[in-house]
Length: 219
Image (cartoon, rainbow, N blue to C red; front, side, top):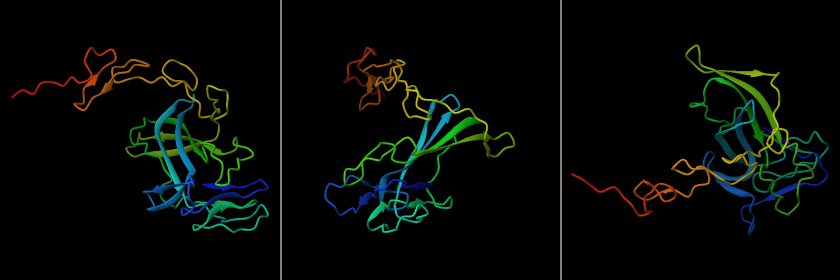
């Protein structure tokens, strides 16, 4: 994963000791504080259907290369990316993955996004352009020989999301509304209000069960 600051101002993340700094989250994978918007790994069908097995991960963000003419100044103690510099996490570093164990053989798009929630830096400065914060690769999963083989294809047709954005994150809800909020409840109803109660029973909504209903205990 390689991110670069190609604009004229630093992207300042800061330190965990700064009060009300919302740039950080604890990283269980590496057991230290990370910048929470570093990388998100998502899998899509070739038609743009999101497969919910994605993985979000933060990393320490620092100036590891300045091929854009910048001067490196940030490290793990005070994080950021100087203008004209970049940070690189090589493929050998852990936690840059998705789990495809339950994904059927076939061809998919793997997308890696940086700052996918479009948050400003710790000084409140927005990025000049969010449309270039991703990379996409077309991969084929094949277990026909008994073990998983992954091949990269270069001729897959890119997809647009329901808003028309190339490799965008907008998806349709169960009503077919782009970026809608309706979800299928535990009773199978789109936009329904049924939920599982403490007895692990789907109640309310159209289930016919009162929300406090529990199966009687029998010997």
